[in-house]
Image (tube, rainbow, N blue to C red):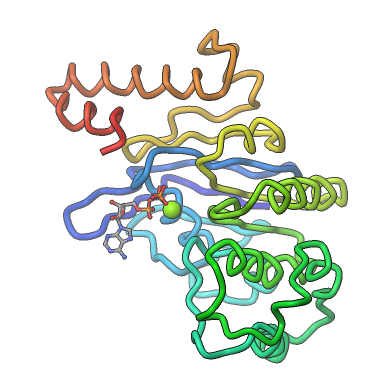
Amino acid sequence: MITIEKLQKSFGKLEVLKGISLEFQRPGITAILGPNGSGKTTLIKSILGMALPDKGRICFQGEDIKGGWAYRRQIDYLPQIARFPENLAVKELLRMIQDLRGGQPDAERLIRLFALEGYLDKRLGTLSGGTRQKVNLVLSLMYDSPLLILDEPTSGLDPLAMLHLKELLRQEKERGKYILITTHIMSFVEEVADEVVFLLEGHIHFQGSLRELKEKYAASSLERAIASILQEGKLAFSSNGHGEKAAKLVLGG
Ligand SMILES: Nc1ncnc2c1ncn2[C@@H]1O[C@H](COP(=O)(O)OP(=O)(O)OP(=O)(O)O)[C@@H](O)[C@H]1O
Ligand SMILES: [Mg+2]
């Protein structure tokens, strides 16, 4: 479905993606992981054509996405930070998006699932963070596109909403969808992801199944495997004279 070849993207002097090659050719759930600022959102925005690569190529179903917009109709997207007018009521926002996109969305099922019935007349500006995220999830899941890209879908969700989200993703996967997610909740990844891509310092440090990741780092949990990746990164950078930068990275700075 997606092929990424030697993708490079900088913002000014900051090289965020330093030649990334990746393929998503099998349906299922892929988790794109990496520390804050490692380029996950930049990679996602590049796939969506919202960030323009400096070099490299992205193909969607065999066609270069450069200059083409039609392919986006086949993608449902949850942005990491969604901005909508604060004075819109939830039902007005839903109607607005439906008017813009057309098609046959199924919002009702999701509204019921996330227990949003009582919020439809409330203005977005008055909602709690988690409730807002549930509304964003309804907006991105109410269509039925073959590719689903969710940037931090778990952000702010309570445990019950998290359970519903996991169940939904499993169902969508069963229906043969391609699903890309980023999240910092490792238990979520362990429960739903088939494959993991780990971004670090502009490169892909690991791509494979959760089992392969744990085996490679002889780790009992995903968290421990990731700690090993970061440790490995730290050693690599300190031998390059970039120890300080790597230390910041390990400490999450
Ligand atoms: N439009 C932009 N202009 C300048 N710098 C940017 C822009 N977008 C992203 N960056 C920088 O690129 C780097 C990667 O950002 P990105 O949002 O892709 O990280 P991320 O892996 O998604 O992080 P997080 O886990 O915090 O969501 C960061 O240092 C960020 O500050
Ligand atoms: Mg991000």
